[in-house]
Image 1: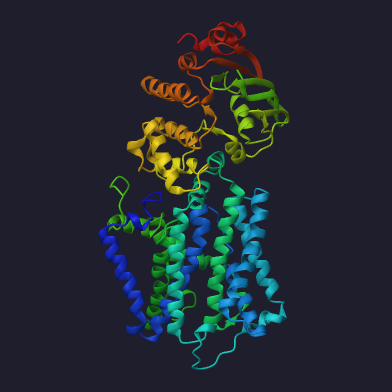
Image 2 (image 1 turned 180 degrees about the vertical axis):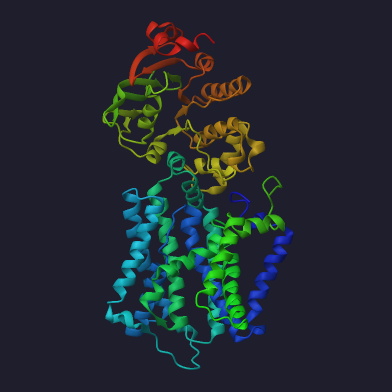
Length: 339
Length: 242
């Protein structure tokens, strides 16, 4: 699978289309057949799929490695939560400001990085630094609870979708909508002039620039889109869990968790981050279950298995599971098979 | 004959080493000019100075009287200069057509229109049958042609070609020479090329500029230049034999 042709729906085979429709139907009816636990697992899967898609815009489309995406999750979460708790502004309005704040933060990082030629790994370090500063900083902002945590009011049995208050099923569908929305947005972006320019910048910045692409602008827009989308994931998180702790929300570990689905599924592909989330989250859950069922109570055992599984996937499918799967099952047309 | 490109007293030092020293030449509109010289003579540096990869220490570059000195590569492209890279830089994971679409998008906002233009350019460079292959899978001659195709898609008034014939077999050289001549004659495209393949230089260029150690040592008609003792001594000496 290569180029745009491999990642567009237009390149999908009949078999791939059937599978896509089945997957969409399955996800649409899941809450009617699944129990509470399964719905919560699926919601987590969808959340990671979504933020993975958002991260993919930077790394996958534009070649910008961010290891600090927890920053945008955290800013989105805290801004929307603060607006709700302190001013009674609901998440649908709050998300606009949440995204705006994240975009400003992203643009500051982007400006520093791109203006002063901070590239590759060093750019990644810059993104980590900002996330870490936020983590430590928010520990001291008592207006949003500081290190003691920030809590949203919870009313049992409340159903107020306009304020994103309701049952787990409501959140499931919101998460599903985010994933589907991000999928269509990513696809539209890749089809656009900007998308072509991003890919060119990812592949060969010098040649892209010689072909008329403004590197600074292309990279800044990638950061802006990615941080805005990620912030939306933060808004969701705040209203879903109703509690925020800087140590968790902004943590390095969270930043890593965000990027794993895309890496496992296939960086730069449309389906990769979604597939990756569907592999990783259930894998983690299954390990927890197995270890408990096996009566083994060794701290860190789950992480060990999880890490080993990751190594296996990354070693054997370095370009991600999706490109391989799509080829094997002939879900997409290969170059030369006609459009 | 009006000058399309004017290079005036261009100089560039790298850590004290003079890569290009007070080089001046003009490229008249509609002509083909070859820049030759031994390795390390400053040819590619001169190209990079024209294309805006880095600014010159001194001197200026003008295109149709417009000063381009200090502009960034994308601005130079917008001003009307397309370039290829000596070490080819295809967008490896994109298809051949997508590579050229990126070039076409320099002047075109609609992706659909850019795609049509890209197909026409690929047709011209005899790459149409490879359009859907990933660029990284191309052979070297095809990659060289892709470089030209992508640069051409930006619809330049001046095309800078950095050794697009190097590494090609004689028959492939002839094909490329035909394409370039055709572009120049039929569409009036002005071309400035760095080239080592003297056969092509003699066949294509109206004028030849010779650089050595960063300085211009000759500038004139191809036949005159290859007869110049300084040129023979510094550059052609060994190669004139084969």
